[in-house]
Length: 432
Image (tube, rainbow, N blue to C red; front, top):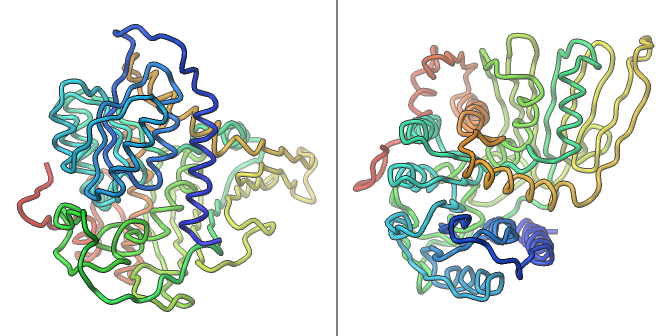
């Protein structure tokens, strides 16, 4: 199945489930309402908006997109979920300006995560921002500082962090049942990703504000591949599979293993299977040296076979046994000469990832908007996970083993890598 069609199917399934679950008849007191402004009406917004509006206290007075077609679809979705058509705007600042918005839901391409989040915090609004937190370490740091400075709540949209069977697996790792963990692997071998062709440059579609879409990214001629879903395969806007699926899986690895940062990273890979005009690697391996263990990230576009035949997942290898985890469940494989563990398999309900996990993630955020407590993927966690993912790309793009000073958030041995840890914004946009 192609990437777009697969994601459309999953998002459609998620929103249909949310619509079925939404208790629309229940009245909500005005003081209990949470009013969201949807910024970005692409694919992921369908699932996110459905999960938010499955909660009867949530309203959506306004949606925003630079593409008239997507804007109309976003407005139609909200109207279907709430029997009221929202206002529509093409400039996200017009969402943030509004006094009737409590939360900004940022579902834009990655290069447009930082500024809407920072501006929303400055305006006293909370933020639910899709992953990764940002396209660079510097952007992610600026977002963290804005959230802290203005006392806001931010949840990064990594719903696996709220999945029940993922949490159970993490608890087993943290309880020491596997013994001392020495190696963690995370992988994504995706046969539905890759091969987008090499269409020529041309004119933006009618109704698209392409200059606004580019925003702080470098000025480029319009190319259909450098737009909408496929933006993620170009360095100007994203970080490829490392920051797309990598953030999900590395997030689980770091959740289980704790907050210690990596000391160094090496990475290799390239475009070996895909022949098109994309830039990010179709094949990549990154090796992270943490203080007490090694983390290995692997991805391949156009397929491959992961551990146990799983196309994506994680493994935690300890002195007593290995735990293997993916969205279908998790299993424990004891070390043959050890007697402290028994083989075990926990099958996940099919809803746990695509419905229950995403719903629980949104519900946790809404509860934290009221309580002012930190959500499960708060800004510190989002920044940490996003930074670790970016470090793998810094090592790949420079061809160097990079040494990381986590306290100063600097690469100590490569000026080229440090340059890639930030970016120059196209005027008139600036970070901060």
